[in-house]
Length: 587
Image 1 (cartoon, rainbow, N blue to C red):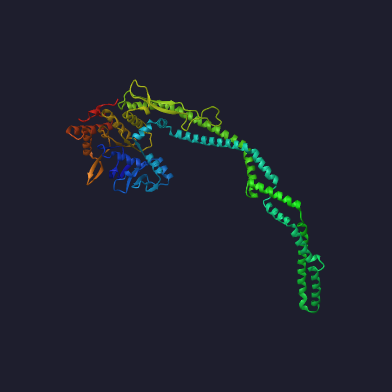
Image 2 (tube, rainbow, N blue to C red):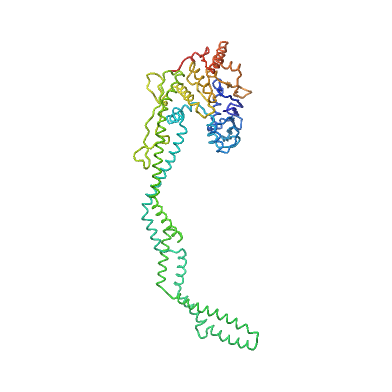
C-alpha cells in the first residue's frame, strides 16, 4: 500500500507531501489545477521517460518519492533478487535533473530504471487512457481471460515447457545444419587427413633437413678441410701426433735424470689422446661430407613438400599436424551425430507431447472460463448504465506452427493454442464489434472499470490509480462508478482523479488540488480535506462558482448516502442546479 507520496519541483508542483489512506483516495480540483501532475509523478515512479521540461523553473532537479508498506511476498522476492534490504517497507525515489539525467533509488540504494519500473509496477497500477489502449489491444485479451480464470500458474508452467521445447528445437536445427555441413565436407576432411598422414611429419624435421641441406651444398669444401685436418693431425708422416711421439721420448729421458719432469709426460699423454680422438672424428666426418647429389635432391624435394603443407594448413609443421587432428575430431563428431540425433529427437518428441497436452488443458480451462467472464463483465456494465449491452469472448483460429519431428500436427504458440478477442455490442440490434472499434470513451471507461472490479479480488497489485475514470459519464452512472470504486477499494488501495461529486463522495480520503499565485510564482497546492472542507468541495463540484445552501445540502446528502452505501444501503443520484447534463446517461 502507498502510504506517503512526496513531489518536489515537478512542473508547477513546488513541494507536495501526501499521506494516503487505505481504501479510496480521491483528488479533485478545477481543470488545469495540476491534477495531471499527480499522474505524471506516478508514471515517473513506474520508469517512464523523463525530460528536463518537467523540472520546475529555477530548480536544479525534480524529485518524486513514495513509501510503500505491507509489501507482498512477490515484491519481497524481487527485492531479495537485487539484494535490497527492507523491513516490510520500501521507499522509491526518482530524481530528474535540469540536464535531463535521471537517477533511481530503492531504499536509498541506486538501481537501474528498469529495476525501478519492474518493482513499482508490481506495487502500483495506473489506469488511464494508455491502459485503455492496452485493453483495446486483442493481444492482451488472452492474458485478461487467464487472470480471471486463475491460470497464471498454469500459464507460467506451460511457458517454461514451451521455452524448453523451443530450445530443443533450436538444438535440433543446429544439429541438422551441422550434419549437412559435415556431410558436404567428409570427403575433403578425409583427403586432408590422408595427405598429412602420407607425409609422416615430425615437428623438428624441417630444421634437421635444412642443416643437412647446407652441408651437402658445401660438401666439397667441407671434405677438403676435413681431409687436411686429418692429415695434419694423423695421416701425414710429419703429422702432429707422430711428432708428439718424439716429444714423449724426450720427456721420458728428462724425467729419468730430473724428477721435476715426471708429471709432464702424463700431461702430454692426455693431450695426445684428445688429439687422436679429434683425428678419428675428422676421419669419420669425411664419409658424411662426401658430395651426394641424389641425397641433396631428395632433401630439396622433401623441404618443398613441407613448404606446400605449411602453406595449406598453417605457418608451422605443428599447425599442419593440428589441422589433421581437427579433421579427425570432426569426422568423429560426424560419426557420433547419429546417436545425438536419435537422443535429441526422442527428447523433442516427448517434450512436444507434454507441451501439446498442457496447451490443450489450458485451452479447455479457458473455454470453460470464457462464458463466466462474459457474464461477469455484462453484470458489471449493466449496472453502469449499459443495461442491454452484450460482451463476448471469442476464440480465434491461430496459424499452425510446425516443429521438428511433429509430422503434420500444429504446435501451440508461446501462450498455447488459443487466440482470444473481446467483442462488445453496446446497444440492442447492433452486431458485436471488437473493442478496438468502440468509439465511445465512456463505454470503454466503464468496461475497463468493470474488468478491474472483476479482477481486483485476485490481483496482487496493492495500489491502483484511476485517471479519467469518469470520461463520458455523469448522473446515475457516475454514482454507480463511485459505488464500484468503493467496493474495489475493499480489495486494493484506490487513488482516483475525478471531476464528478457522485464519485468523490465515496472516498475515505479526499484531496483538493488548487492552483495559487504565491508572490510572482504559480504553485499547485494539494490539501487533504477535513469534513467541512470536503463538504464545500463537493458543493463546488455540484454548483460550480455559485455555492448555495441547496448545493451544500445536496453535498451533505451525497456524503451521508455514500456512507450508507458503504453499509449496504442504496445511494441516490444528485445533480446541482448547473449540472443538468449530468443526468444524461450515455447511449
